[in-house]
Length: 244
Image (tube, rainbow, N blue to C red; front, side, top):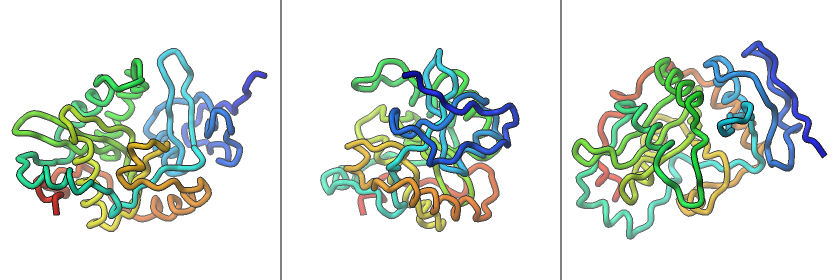
């Protein structure tokens, strides 16, 4: 049986279909079409929706149930890993290398994955969001070398993580833990992690029912936070500080 999905209209501010209408298989698939304009993307994230598709496919929009979430004070690093950080020279910064982070997320090989969902169109869209102060990157450096990082979208006091990478073992864990520490200090309680995976669960992520997630998102995205770079606000965090 062919799957029939709502097609988004040309107006980027047009409402998305209700989350409850998303398919059960593929789980969370909500709509097709539209574009990746800043207005459309921000409209999507404010309603707990994100694009995910591959080259050759139309733009597909998703709202999974359950939804994977980190509490910003709940990112969990193992005791062994924390011990390894005590003498680390790595430092963590924000918004000093967004394009390098998104390119690393797109091109680093991953076990069991062929190609990347971060198409050229997706890259351009998130780089534009970054230029407008809505998308942010967290970067982990060993001297001048980028060894890990992540990027995502901020709306109000909600951070929607998109992808992360490690060029050295533990690089993405350090980026995630540093992000959680700073967001918690700023009063941002949650990080969206989208889809459940054993790796993210091992780091402290929780699976929430979609309805619960969307209620919380509605509150957080309504909180006033001005867009703009995080470089000064985040400052520079030594990775060794995450050992405590």
